[in-house]
Image 1 (cartoon, rainbow, N blue to C red):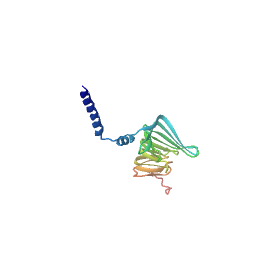
Image 2 (tube, helix red, strand yellow):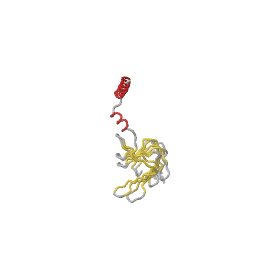
Image 3 (cartoon, rainbow, N blue to C red):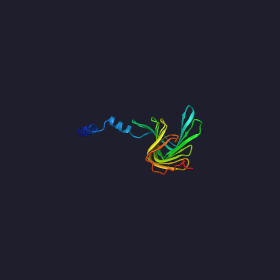
Image 4 (cartoon, rainbow, N blue to C red):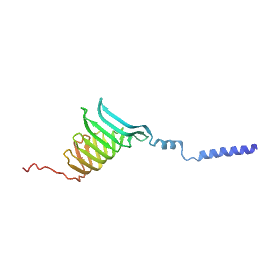
Length: 189
């Protein structure tokens, strides 16, 4: 009986050793796979972020849902249900607003990626509609390479593929223009 128990114990031990030695993934491989996964550091619902510079409010961001993501390769804030960003002038007046149904903020690059029904409105009434817009906070630029529709403060509608502008929408450059532009000829009187 002792021999049978010893034989069974030996078989179990040999099976365990064989299973351990036959594993293809090392501990480092398993750690590298799990570290690249999108894991939230912080998250929340109905949140407001206030970005300041020398105690002055520069931007406010409102979001239905917020996820702070940090991986080995990148760090960003994800806004899967979109939100609204309001920018302010130095005197505290609203300089403009951007709304989107999805947003991602790359914090270290100070870059916002805005997608799905993006609407940007300047303080003087200009409106930009597109499906994709980037806002580079460090350079003070907004831009896209997608279809864009711009409505000027006097109601003119311009369309094109791609644009770039300062973030106050004072100097807009529209690319591949497809809309109609009406100009007043001041030489005729």
